[in-house]
Amino acid sequence: MTTTRTSTARRSFRGIAVAAIAGAGIALSPLPASAAVGGGAGGAVTAAPVAASSSAAQTAVDTALAQRGDMYLYGATGPDRFDCSGLTSFAYKAAGVSIPRTSKAQSTFGTPVAKSDLKPGDLVFFYSPVSHVGMYIGNGQMVHASTAGKPVAVVDVDSMPQYQGARRIA
Image (tube, rainbow, N blue to C red):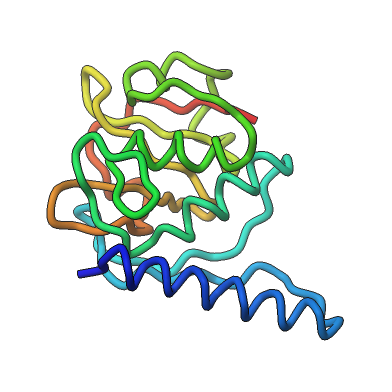
């Protein structure tokens, strides 16, 4: 289980490593993200790097992916524990975009997007009435905080039941 202390240490080390590499003049490109533990029926998958269509959406995707391994907690909005909509609102807040707090409210925010037109950063919604949200990251995958006892993880969108739609935020 990831504790606040180990999660903070992990993020601090990541920041130091990125700063050291960037300071050495090495160009960085997004690395594939891999989920250690699955959060949905489809289990863990490896996230393939796909660029978002806006800098805000890219920041939100990068922020959400950086939370992998943090545990689910109902009502939590970070920085080390999240529920599903807490993760998406936290990620977009990091991008300077304020979105509603709950999955139901998020499902009416932004612009509707067809499933065939999903782009990284789009929010995807599940169940009727809507009670779960994830963030599309490309290649049929999303990152989400699924349920108690499970960490933030990357899963296939189609591994989730009762797809209800998607919204583009940025």
